[in-house]
Image (cartoon, rainbow, N blue to C red):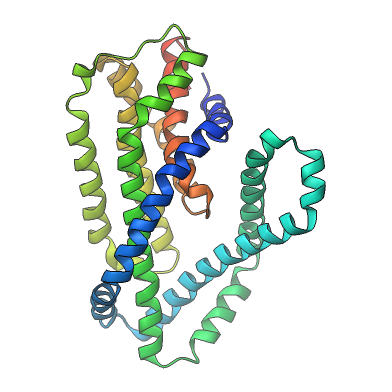
Length: 309
């Protein structure tokens, strides 16, 4: 079974209200938690970041600041464009889109807007980069240092949010995966809980290793483009390792897991797609569910059809 079918089925299921509701209930408390932690820990984190940034040459710092600020501008423009489109065309949307499909339509619209601005930014990157970099040249070193430190501190807390949401979703995965399995694959059956005893320990190890790797590659976060590449790769590794194992441990015996694990291309492809979605505001709260559901469809389609993507 081709991976494209698993991804399409995952999109359909992730945009269902049941998953969106669970995602909101999961993400909103975690976001509040890390915002509160950021508020109280901000001075200390900023101090550490500014100390590390003090070792970076000004030219590198200015280039990285332009790249990071460009990313935040991109997020702001995406959200503003989405708000403008909804404000101007909401009556038409309400008339043409059925009420039960409006949430799915909004998320797809947000993805299309993000894709459009991404293409625009890539095609005009020299102009965007030079303009932001020129603005940064007006600031003295101390102000630029504080600005880049704040951006990196924000990235740290965002990674903490992503990792904590991953832990919560992975622990509660059985509930919504079991519903999809019963609906689409009634012949499949979850494994006994005894077969999953070691999973929690492995999940905690994966999350801790993720932050260790983030710390080891921290110097690359100051290099434009490499910082985005490193961030996406680390997210993909976490998804590929923890999320695939989380799903396979529910439905695939050990020997089947070993066989499926040999198809690294499929596992990494789902992980990369999910990792890129982590960059899209609002959509990122759905990415853990999307990854698990995509792996569920691929695994059960394989186990019950004999085909491999």
